[in-house]
Length: 314
Image (tube, one colour):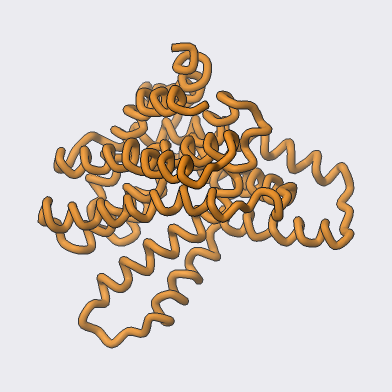
C-alpha cells in the first residue's frame, strides 16, 4: 500500500491536475498544446541528451536486458495485431495500429518518474538504456509494418519502405536528442570536455521536462473519450499492462538480470501505452478511437497494475 501512495500516486496526481485544469477550462487547448510541445520538442530531448551523454555505454548496454524488454514488446505487437485482425475482424491497417498500441509503452513520461520514485535516481540507468532504442526502433518497426500493409499488391522494395520509415523517425526531436547524446558521449570518451555551465543548463531544462510532460499529458488525455469497441480497448489494456511486463519479468529471471536491470526492464514494460500510440494511429487515419480510448483507459488502470508489478519485484 505504501508504494501506491508514495510512488505511484504523486505521478498520477500531476497527470490528474492537468486533466482537471482542462476539464475546468482553466487553460485552453492551445495553451496545453504549447506545454506539450515544449516538453516533447525541447525539454524531453534535452533530458534524454543529458542521460545518454552520461551513460557508460559498455557497462549499461547489456544485450540480455534489451532482449528481455523488446521480446515482450514485439510479442505484444504480434499478438495484438493477430487478434485484432482474426478475432476482432479489423482491417489489416487497423490491426497494425492496435498492435502498435500494445507495443509502445509510455517509457519516458511515466516509466522514468515511477522508477525514480520507487528506487531512486541511480536506478534509471537501465531505463535510459531501453529508452535510447525505444522510439527509433519501435517507430521504425511500426511505420515499416504499416507501409507494407498499405502497399500490398504494389511493386515496392523492402529497402525503399525501410528508408522512408527511418527518414521519418530521424526527424523526431526525441530521436535527435538521443543521437546527440550518443555523439557527445563518444566525443567525451575521446577527450572532449564541455564547460560546467553547459551541463548546468542541461540539468535546468531536464528538471522541467517530466513535470511539464505529465501535466500536459493530463490535459491531452482530457480530450479523449472512452469510445470505440470495448473488446479492442480491453485487448490493448491486457496486453500492454499484463503480457508485456509478464514476458519481460519471465525472461529477466531466465537471463539472470541484476536487481537493477530487472526493475528497469519490468517497470518500463509495465507502463501503459503513450500518447504516441494515438499519434501513430492518427498519422495513418486508422483505429483512432480505439487507440485514444486505450491510452486513456490503460493509463488509469496502470495505477493498479504498476502497484502489482512493484510488489513482484525485489
